Amino acid sequence: MREMRRSRGLTVLPVLMAAIAAAVPSVASAQSGSTLPKIVRPALPAGTVTKTYKVPLSIKPGQNLNLYDTIKANQRPSEAGWIVGFRPDLKFADGSTPPVDQIHLHHLVMLLNNDIIVASGEEKTHITLPTGFGNPYKPTDRLVLNHMIHNFTANPEKVVFEYTVDFLPASAPAAASMMGVRTQFVDVEGGKAYPVFDVKRNAGTNGRYTYPAQAPASLSPRNRVRVQRDGTLVQTAGHLHPGGLYTDLFVTRGDKTVKIFRSNAHYYGASKLASWNMSMGSTSPDWRVAVKRNDILSVQVTYDTRKAAWYESMGISPVALSDAPAGGADPFTNLSAIDQTEVLTHGELKENRDYGGRKTQGYADARKLADGPTLSKVKIKDFVYKQGDLTMPGKKGLPPLVAPGKSITFVNEDPLREIFHTITPCKAPCNRSSGVSYPLADGVQVDSGELGFGPIGVTAAANRATWSTPTYLKPGTYSYFCRIHPDMRGAWRVKKPKATQR
Ligand SMILES: [Cu+2]
Image: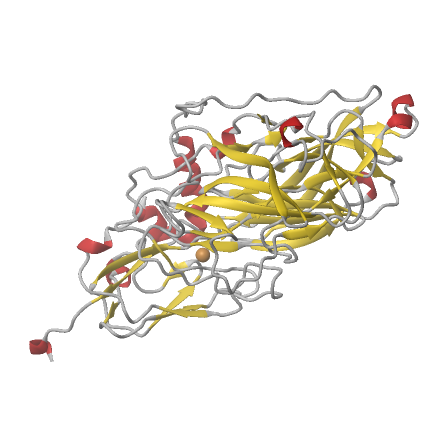
C-alpha cells in the first residue's frame, strides 16, 4: 500500500481508506460489561406525518469548515404546524452512508428563527419531544442549517444532509392542544459560534477532567444561561466528543444549585472512550423540571484523560423548555420527583464502527529510519509533510533533525482558508490504519492547532500558518499525525550533535 500511495500521491487516500473499511470485521454490537438504557420513543400525536428532506451539500477536499446554509422551500415542511421529532443523517448522493472516518459530521445545528431546534453530531441523537410538545413552525420562518462536515479525504465530495421530521400539521385536531417548546442552548463555551475547548492528557483528578469546574480560574465561566420566564424543562440530551464520559445539567436559584440530569455517553464495542461509536443518554418522556425566571441553567462535561488528549472538545446540553404549565416538579423542594432515568434515542450506528489501528504497510516506523537533514522548516503541501512524512519513500521520508533547544517550524502551504492541517504527536510508531479511534493524541503533549485562516471564533482555524516544535524536547523520534486528515503521518527527531561530528 505504501507503494501505491507513493506513486499516486494523495488522491489515493480514499482508495486506501475504502480498502481499509472493506477489511473491517463486523464488530460486536453490544456494549460490553454494562447494560444499555432502553431505546424509548414517545408516542406521536394523532395526525403526525413523517417526511425526509434532503439538502445536497458540496464539500471540498480535506474540508473542516463551520458553514451556514439557508434551507430552501422544497427542503422543508410547506405548511404550518408542529415539529415533534427530528432525526439527522448524512448520506452520499447514492444514498449510502459515509463511514465516519471518511466523512464525519462534526456537528449540525438547525436554527428556526435563530433559535436552535436541534444540535447534534456524529452520534446523531434523535429528537422526539414528549407527547403533546412541539416546536411551532411556519413555512415563512427562517430555517438555517449550521454544519461542520469534515472530509478526511483529499477528494471533493457530494453529500446529502438528510433530515426526517415528525410533523403535526396545524390543521390536525391534535394540534389544538399542543404545547410549544423552544430549545435553550446550554453549552460549556456558550456564546461562541464554534464552542470548543481542549482536554489535556492527565488533566483533572484520577484521569477525569470536568470542564469548566477544573479549568484554570482565569477562564470565565461561559456555561451559564439565565431563564427568561417561568416555565418547564421537558427534555435534554448531552452532546460531547470521543473521550467524553457525561454531561451534567444543573439549575441554580439564589445560592442553591442542584443537578437535574446526567447524560452519559454509552460507547459500543471494544474501543471505549475513544470513538464516535456511542449513543448519548436522553431524559425519559416524563422528565419535567419547573424553572423560574432568573434561574440559571448550567452544564459541565467530564472527559477521561488517561488515554490521550482530546482537542476541540464539546460539552452541550440543549434543553427543550416550555412556557406552558406542564406539571414540572420544583428541583429545590422536590428533586426526587424528577425522573432521572436515562433513555436512548437510537442504537449503534454501523458507520461509526471502523476504529482503525490495524497493521498496514502504508507507513514507516520512523524510529527505525536513518537521520534526515537538519532543518528549521518543514512545509506541508498537497496533504504531505515535505520532510519526514511516513508515507514518503527515500530521503524525503527520513525524519528531519533538530538539535536540543532548537525548533522546527511547520508551514501549511495548502490553501489556507480551506485546508487546515495539524501536527499532533501520537505515540511512536503511529503507523497503523486510520479510524475513529486511531491515531490518538497520545504522544508528547503539544499540538499545533489547525494551521489555516478563517473568521475568528467561527471556524476551527488557528489563524496561523505556522507552528514551531517546543525547544524543551529531549532527544528522540517524535511521531505525529494530522487531526483533520489522520492518514497524514510524520516524524521529526531531536538529536544531540556529537562533539566529534563538527
Ligand atoms: Cu491535514
